[in-house]
Amino acid sequence: MARQKHFNVDGRHFYIDLVFYNYILKCFVLIDLKLGDLTHQDIGQMQMYVNYYTRKMMNEGDNPPIGIVLCADKSDTLVEYTLPEDNNQIFAAKYLPYMPTKEELRRELNLEEFEKKE
Image 1 (tube, one colour):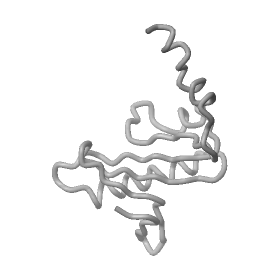
Image 2 (cartoon, helix red, strand yellow):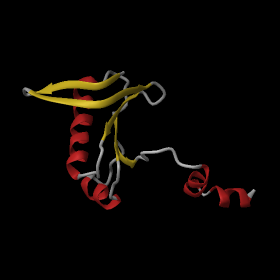
Image 3 (tube, rainbow, N blue to C red):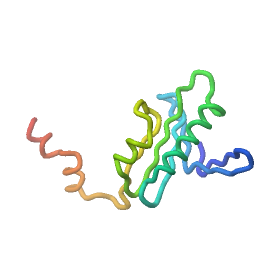
Image 4 (tube, rainbow, N blue to C red):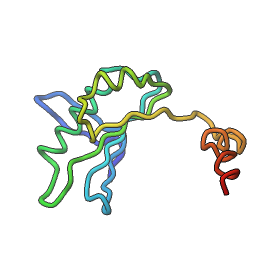
């Protein structure tokens, strides 16, 4: 739907890196890209984006928006303590700055174990 989606709150300008609408899930998907390590401020910023879309942009029949923060590195513990225990709207994931080799993908997906079970 948008790249660098601008919105204004009390005269302050905010930009969501990517905004999609998933027609199967019937919800907005907000993606924020971070070059460095994930911080609790990044998660709080995404929470604000999700809250804004929940209160201002959702239409009747929509499900709550999903927020995804893609970062160079993240701490699962930091994410766990920053988000509420019942969170099902905000997610953080580490991105790879390069295409992995076939061998790296096999290791990551545990394909060797899968192939042995067949």
